[in-house]
Image 1 (cartoon, protein in one colour):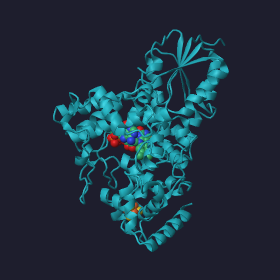
Image 2 (image 1 turned 60 degrees about the vertical axis):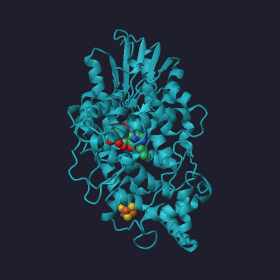
Image 3 (image 1 turned 60 degrees about the horizontal axis):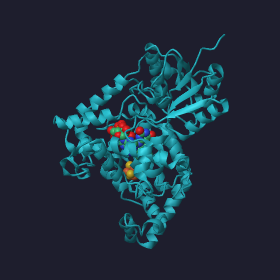
Image 4 (image 1 turned 120 degrees about the horizontal axis):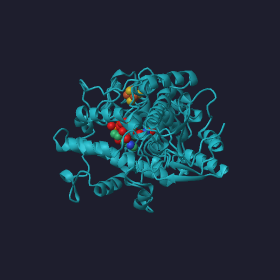
Length: 513
Ligand code: FAD
Ligand code: SF4
């Protein structure tokens, strides 16, 4: 059989599902082909939650169908028993069959994928054109220019720079309302009575395409972690717009004050639940920023909530992406705190007596989601205090969350949560005892441990490990201006008591190895 004529092969990866994406610009349906591939390795290179795999496959199939309906030719390699083991293998076979003059790709979200695809094109002698990803407001070049030779990259400075540049929430050259940061009005606990009735987020129930993909995932990856019965993530741009509108109308007003709060049985509280839609490119980041600002202007949401929300997308999201590309693949190897403990087995099952970890990991297994503070101050904090090897906790976050793509996951995990980059991303480790969790949630009320105890039968592991963490890293942090105050707390402890706490921490570590 004669192979079809192909001038340019335009690659669309599972997190590049935007019809206006750079790789698709200038596509000529008469002589170019789009290429998409459901490669097995993308679901197995870290143990991937069933919902994460289903989300990507369903999003891809919907996008393929949309392209085909628009008259764009697509070569689609679907996942089945004989499917390509890796993206590279799939592309290699396609280059042989089609012999395109050029391959076009939007910059992918992972160093590994870029290197793999480059290698295949090189081996085949086909020119690869990698286009800048215009989904982001800040290009990698802009970020590098902003970062210059700085040894620490302060989010706050970057955020102000971008807010000024994009004229978001500005009053001339000053921040709207006179202050850049509204943290004093935000980050509140919910109080003893809890949140009351929280509006449930709009669900996107599985359609026929998604159901077919869910069946496929169960057959192909029966031992993968997580469940699929709660799957209701947006898989089309229309569903993504609906999810955003629902957040703006019902949860944005409370987002600011309660963005750090946690409550049993409330995985989403007032969070937007749009990271999957953004990361798969079903939603352009300019849209949530614009509609949140509109909500402020029309009096439907207060400034503290809108500013807090804008900070996450215009600030953090753009910032971590800049860090990922600036630091290169070596970032993944960093281990500034010299941590080597294995990840406790209960991270894969949720089977533990620690109520906070049981609740959050159980929720992740069920939905593939936890909100930011659950990730940072429950699962991340425990790994930090225990001293888990950064690569192991990185693999867990990359596999277990529906919104995980390495450019956003790695700086959050290795930098913000584990301090593995030695303070490039945050000036001090997010270390806290069980008292923080008790203040910000109701988890401790249902736990057989006591957040106030570091020793004894009811000792909270966070509290025991917290003191041990301070003692272990005393030399590094006690003279640093940003951390000295926290480390001075060690002086409150009798040396003998600290010694016993450290022995208890060591015993805990042995029992979880
Ligand atoms: P909201 O809390 O409602 O925030 C709105 C949006 O802001 C999010 O959708 C997201 O796009 C953006 N945002 C908020 N915080 C961050 C942040 N720290 N970095 C980048 N963007 C942010 N986010 C991912 O998208 N993918 C990941 O793999 C990921 N891994 C993380 C790992 C760790 C250890 C930590 C601490 C955070 C991680 N985050 C990740 C950031 C954040 O937790 C999620 O973006 C957020 O919980 C998604 O839920 P939401 O849409 O309800 O967000
Ligand atoms: Fe978690 Fe400790 Fe509170 Fe139990 S007592 S829920 S382990 S913080």
